Image (cartoon, rainbow, N blue to C red; front, side, top):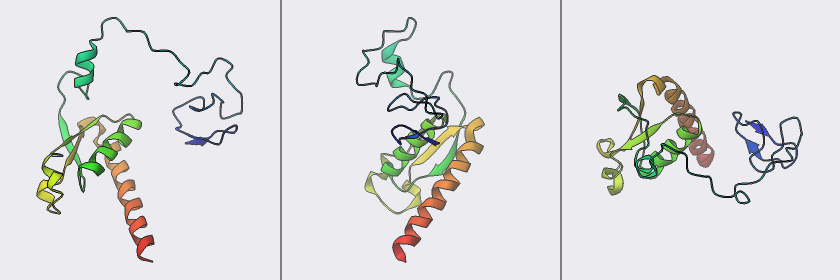
Amino acid sequence: MWTCPKCNSIVDATFDVCWACGTTPEGVEDPSFVTADEAGPIDDVPGINKDHAADSELPEPPLDLVEGYRAYDSTEAQFLVDRLAERGIAAVTQGARMSLTESPLSLFAPRIMVREQDLLRARIFFEEFERRKRSRVQSAVD
């Protein structure tokens, strides 16, 4: 992560320019930068079936998915899937509908499934998430 020198936005390290203003970490502004709100629609890309792309969250062919984490509830599970996607780790939830009862039983906890080759990176992320979660709980108790 880096902080934009122009607008102070927090920017993911994978980006070369600030998402909000188009400035590089060195402070150089991109004169051709436009925000997503100002940009027009993206033209259709030949060979991509939009209907199929919207339905699948993971690339084809079918992948061997493994359990990476058991979330507390469906909201936490979706939050984690979104954060993993930001890091380039494809993930899906299993059992999120079962967790709608919001039962504290781990039997119904939604599982976050990741590709086997992404499991190590995902576990590192989950360990950091757990550490931060414990820290917030401890701060609230103190």
